Amino acid sequence: MKKLINSPDSVIADALRGMAAAHPSLAVDLENRVISRAGGATQGKVGLVSGGGSGHEPLHGGYVGYGMLDAAAPGEVYTSPVPDQILAATKAADGGAGVLHIVKNYTGDVLNFRMAAELADDEDVRVVDVVTNDDAAVEDSTYTAGRRGVGGTVFVEKIAGAAAEEGADLDTVAGIATHVNEVTRSFAIALHAGTVPAAGKPGFDLADDEVELGVGIHGEPGRERGKMAPIHEFVGYSLDVIHADRPISGDVLVMLNGQGGSPLIELYGAFAEAVAWIEGHGARVARSLVGNYITSLDQQGFSISVMSLDDDLLRLWDAPVETPALRWGR
View 1 (spheres, rainbow, N blue to C red):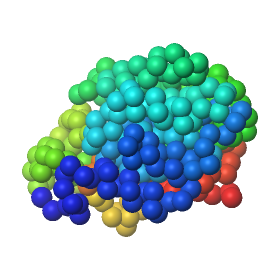
View 2: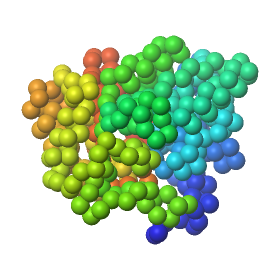
View 3: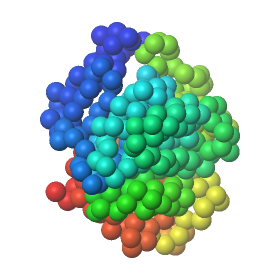
View 4: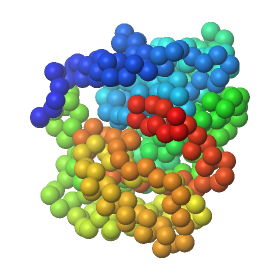
């Protein structure tokens, strides 16, 4: 294993120290492992908190800032943050208008966030959670009951965050987050597994000519193994799955996401094929992201997330955002 680390035990602490040094807009609590806005909670605004296992950067700490999250709780690599850690993030985000927990649908995350919400309630902080489950690949999988929460989580955090900045109340923000999740579908393909530092080897084995179709963000199995092929075939396969689950029509937001190990030149090539497929099916790519937005350590491959847009969602997507990983309009 070749990693740019001091040791497997210090990976997260070192990364958090680096985030604190690189981004003065963030307040990084190294002891509790909480990332929040440097200015503290905005009084009277709904707070947004998310989190999950580390290894998916920039999710979630890279999305803390104006227009998105108020705080994030990074757990161990591919492991949920613990309830006390989530509670600390919740309190850091609380401006008196309640807090929304945005939780990817993994069993450990769901249980620990709900336990943290109960602890917050004991301290008179109202919490509502929204669980993302946008993965169209499989119905049930390793670590989940039901569909996995994956790339669509980025859309939820951005759009719900914009609504909160506008002053929407907690129930309204939660309703918007739920709607974004409902109109989003994602699918991922892996060429090579990511390597967890503590394990020292790839999370699964693929032959030189094999790919995993429908892989999860922790390297969980997809729906089948396939053979290497030109990128247009993989993009077409992914969008066929998404389209069969929720038809792609009208204006859409598309994220062509790297998983940490694929170069941008390949991602742009994949995006070109995605646009051709979508336009060929009578829809229009109105907004897009291309790059690494929810990674799986150094896993090679890509994921596609497609969200149906209406005027309100488009306005909220275009609203100003200023975080380490996503920024426009300010």
